[in-house]
Length: 286
Image (cartoon, rainbow, N blue to C red; front, side, top):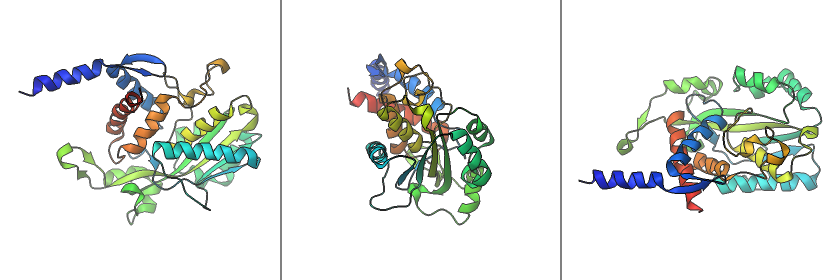
């Protein structure tokens, strides 16, 4: 008896219009856009999971004057708090290091030679992309498989960290009423190294660059991401007059969804849930 009204309500919700990145569309269209966006922006899942931070962020910067570094870090930290990530207070050991250099191509070659450990969780394709010359910004991540919410990893955590695919050998838990199969562990970002090529970002606004860096810090983002919607991720791929001034509503909604929805489920299921959450977040502020 309830099927008819429920289905009718669902259809009505699908037809309701909202504005996404300046374009009016139905919720159904917005959901499909959000799904395409997450697939285009998030790095290829490892261990069939998307990754996020469980630990508090501690951000450091090298190569900037204090009067530039402090507001840059402040803006990134404010974004992190707004989307639901944690930020360390007081003195802390940086787990995010932004390095502003004059020749990032040479700097990355040095990292490959002298600090290959920082690239051990990057795939061959990701390393190949990183080694291509000309990037204004490069980022690469350290990650580990650990207990939910960042709680202690299993006894074989070190082995899992070096071989993320091993997560698929872990037992799974059933969430009961939701009937979803979830893992008892999650893939967490543990560190980010960012190389910023100062000459190549010289013509980008402070706010736009800050938000671009924040997005790359808070999610495992494809360096060559090319979403078909207005996004801060496209900052260096569009003409100067088309560059976003900062994060778009779609960008911020994705980060909020990433930190609001449990990540201990398959990447495909997680992206679909994120897309639904993104539509809710965008609609809520209209």
